[in-house]
Length: 183
Image 1: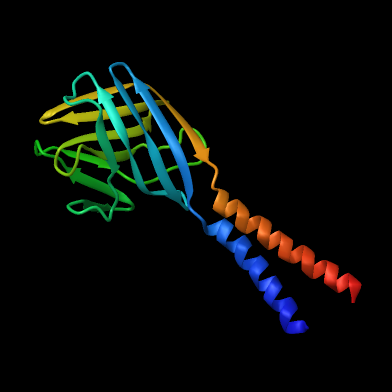
Image 2: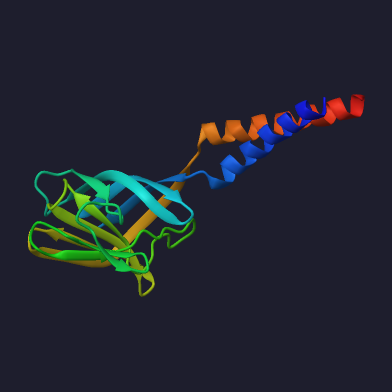
């Protein structure tokens, strides 16, 4: 009987630890004059580990184009140390960023997130926070467009699987407590 109780308790504790270490998915929506970017970021322990989306801009043909987050694991990325990275795009221009993502505003760091636009070595998009405002850098070939008038909206996406693990873990604890009271 003692082994069975430990088994139920182990399941409950594992469910709780799964919730604590699980990634959080965020939807983002960035709007600026002549430019709009939307997508999803997978964040683990304050680091964006992956992200995809699309971008529409008056300077981009075709529009919209796909977005893919650049991380330290991206082929061709230059690790600048301290979590900072640099990625060279088709026109030979580098965008510098990192993968820091906060759960509260302003969400992105000073260096910001770097995205590939349309695929590797194509155009680039950088989204960050500086001087009290969300800024962007948008690289098309050799031309760099920059601005700090954009707005960034971020919302967490509920994860039903994680919630189910928590509920089942709590249910296991409840069963253990009921059986213990009955004994």
